[in-house]
Each structure stands twice: as structure tokens, then as C-alpha cells.
Image (tube, rainbow, N blue to C red; front, top):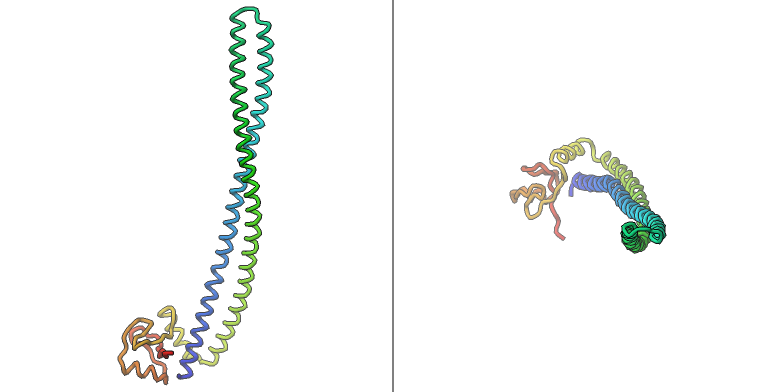
Length: 236
């Protein structure tokens, strides 16, 4: 194969590697942001659950304080009942006592319900806290791994750029300019294989005689349809 064709293939391979590196480099900050956002979401959920438990406990304490007042009120009404002088007065105290007892019963029921809910929420919160601790550790590891990968990619990029610079210097400006013009004009590969007399760049069938010339590999030939540089695909 003509040396220039070999150089063009080598240049295109380097450019593909550089493009792959740059694509991965650009994706890593997004991956890191996604990890951080996932952790923030988990922490927000944990905080919400913790706040709910705090509010529940405050509500329970408030009801317990109310229960103390209701029991004091009950004792007061029971004392007043004993000193009632008239039947209407006696009946009034009885109604107050019944209402207070009803309030105490409702209050105690609510407190028991909150205590039960609180126990379940506390258990769930402890589990979630352990999970969150694990997520923090895992997120830190993933981000550190991505930072390390960025460092590796940066070195790989420098290596590929240096290799490209060295190869371009050997190729000469005319050949490189021709390659760059095709690459930028068509997008993607500037050098493509022909398979069974078909250009793999635009899928145009080439004349048999022209395909035979490409197979020889003695000179740089381009597809008349897409303008890409053609190389014969050797079958293994």
C-alpha cells in the first residue's frame, strides 16, 4: 500500500482516538454531577423523614402536656361534684366530667398512635441513616475514580496529540490539508474502505475498473460521489 495511504489511515486512527478521549472527558463532569445530585436527593429524603419524626415527637409531647392538664381538670370537677348543692349544679359537673374523660381517652389514644408511629419512623430512620452513610462512601469512591480517570485521559490526550503532531510533520502540508478538508467537509471519516466495490462512506457502487485501481493501492483515489479517500478492504 502506498506510504501516504498508510499515513492517512494512521492519522485517522489517531483522530478517532482523540475524539473518543474528548467525548469521555466531556461526559465525566456530567457523571460526577449526577452522582452528587443523587446523593443530595438521598440526603434531602433523609432530612425530610427526620423532620417528620421531630414534628411527630413534638406533637406527642404537646398531647402529653394536654393530658396532664385534662387529668388536673378531671380532679377539679370531681372535687366540685362532691360540693354541689343543687341537682342542676350536680348534673353540670357530671357533664363536664364525662366530657373531660372523653377528652382524656381520645388524647391517650392519639398518644399511643403517635408512639407506635414514632417507633416505626425511628427504626426506618436508623436504617436510612445507615444506607445514607454507605451512599456517601460509595459516591466519594465513584467521584474519586472519575477524577482519576480524567487524569488518565488527560495524559492519553497529550500522548495522542504529540503522536499526531509528529505524524503530520512527516506527511507534509498538502496531504494533511487534503485530509482535513475532506474530514471537515463530510464529517466523520475522511478515509474509508471499499467492500465488494462499494464505498462504505456513501454506499455508492464503484465501477469495477476503478475498484481494481483502488485495490492496487499505488495512489490516493477518492470516491466520485462523496469525495472520501478510498482504500481496499483486505479480506482475512
